[in-house]
Length: 126
Image (cartoon, rainbow, N blue to C red; front, top):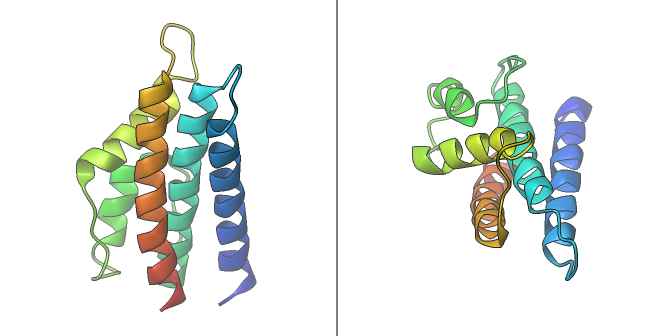
């Protein structure tokens, strides 16, 4: 595996660790940050998988769009589009005034992240 892909994976795993750590906080938990770092983890792993498959990832954050780019180059890639849309929306909407994530929304984002992270790590290790 090349160093650029390894760096994408390290950064993704750091986002996952941050989201997981924040979810375990008992007081003043930043649910918005959990959503954001969950999305960032998956975005970075998807971009690493694009690179592994000879593609240059675009500078976008929409996970559904990244999935559309991955599908033709990585035949084993599949996921629920609803999950990708949820993570994308949660990471953007909850970062700005007017909306905030609650515990259930953050837990859902982290669960989606965990599941997709497992799939993406497996595809990256093949």
